[in-house]
Image (cartoon, rainbow, N blue to C red; front, top):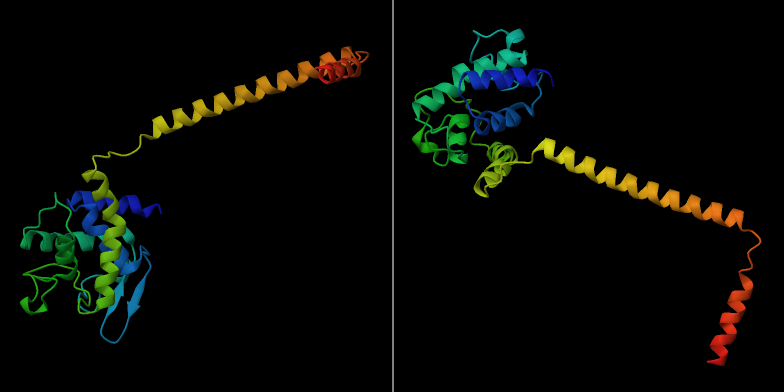
Amino acid sequence: MEWLQGVKDIMIKYNIPDWIWKPIMNTESGGNPKDAFITSKESSYGLFQINKKAHPEYSINDLLDPVKNAEIAARDFLTPAIHSMNIDITKPSLRSAQIVYSGMVDPNDFSKGYIPSGGIRPDWSSEETRNRFSINYDINVGDIEIAEESGYTGVNPDQVFLNTKESLIKIIIMIVIFLVGIYALFMILKDNTDIDLITPLKEFAKMKKGG
């Protein structure tokens, strides 16, 4: 997915953290930039499923371009929602992500209505949509939060490579030593094919019986 880096750059440009935009993108389109949902009431396209019927100012070509779609979403929907509700982007929160996504003042109380501006505003009354978003939030953010709380900062890829390399070297050395030993034993037996190995065994057996 070459376009993904472009999307990440857009989100960095608008200072939108991963824990907000990734669950939204995955809930809306599953990360498919060509996704489209067309009914009598809406014509939604792209990563963030921008509804062209509600927003005719956007062209279909722009909406199907993942980077342009991401910029439209970041500029016109996510950023306004973050600002209008003073979302603290430094603290990952399911509730905050739900507000930005749903565009609702209280994602658990529909009676409070929508925020002043922004939000993707899907069909938040749908339990399936709410559950899918929560799952995507956990998938994209949960592991990061657990790692941060435990003080785990991640694996150093260079160290993993070094450790793996050292282990492989040790295994190779052991194999070489084993093969050299087998070869040496073979050469000894080859040069001493006339050695009588049976007689010492018989003598040993007699000694055991005598004991």
